[in-house]
Image (cartoon, rainbow, N blue to C red; front, side):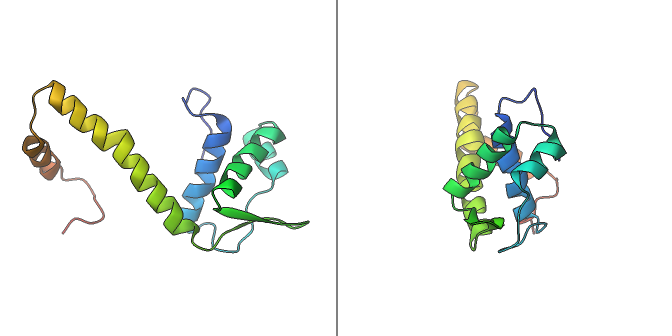
Length: 127
């Protein structure tokens, strides 16, 4: 994954998201060591303090934990925590905005649901 300098998200937040994505996709497993500050700094050509801030964000959320002298590791329950956090963010960032825009355009919730049902993309839970 890449960092995007033109993103509205700070670089440290992007670092945290990249690690979260790797945890969700199974690249990083429970109790497996994550990248060090120096590795992230070199990999993404960023200041080590920025990398550390991204890692500390994950520590604060208990997604990763520190082992003194050894590094940082993926916490038990990290996948479920990340999924729940992102589902809540999805609701706030997309669903609420979608419905508010629908209200401005006088589109009913039923019409929005019909639009969603028309979508034939690769949704995971589709039957």
